[in-house]
Image 1: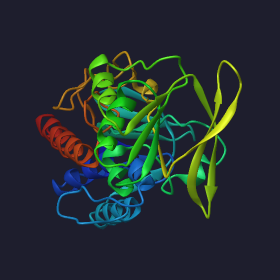
Image 2: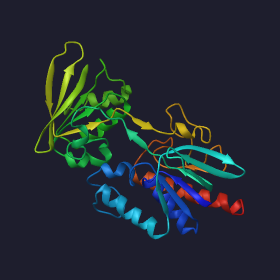
Image 3: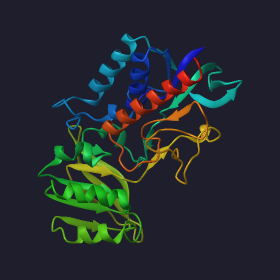
Length: 306
């Protein structure tokens, strides 16, 4: 039986593994797709303390090498269940495996809700982004669009308006839905324009770089292209925590309802990273959660005499 199972191989999950391994605990990481999580979609990271610049893939690779060198085990499977049996945590997978541990850390992350238009996936990192804090500096002095009209989109637009030559907000509803305060801030920015009642239908590109956003008027069906150098998609995040609702309480949006202590309603089960209810989702906050959850799990095992 493993001391700690970490579900998820992103920044939070691998940081949790790192801290647990350094505390002398055995660790199994179960990841369903590829190690690294969302950060691997960032071609350039310049806001991680102590590192001037790196790619998201470089960060993920180095962290993965670090935990492997310390003895972490890894399984590429999709976790579908978590149960408690006679003081043990039992993790089951879609592939039919069953793993047992003294404690479990859920670092399941989130997915950015995508537009689902042709060319979107291919242009990620080459004009399409999902995080203004992460990538906004790359578009300083250039024209960008923001897809969405809620609080997240308006916050992205506020940040980008301080860097970019022009910001165009594209909303498919007849009006913006974000807070009035944010709308008022943007209304006072001369380099911000708002286009509502438009549905994004496609992207234009040249030489593998984004050149514009194709849109269709919802009411008239008229089609046109909005030229831009970058598109920031802010139409929501999707947590994938439903399989663990029995062990960890979820909030109304599907995130784990856990505080900075990363505890859950079930002893021996902890959460970490973007899957947790929080205000800021960044590489640094994911790493912080991983450390907190790992040390909490180690203390739990110590108290259990394991």
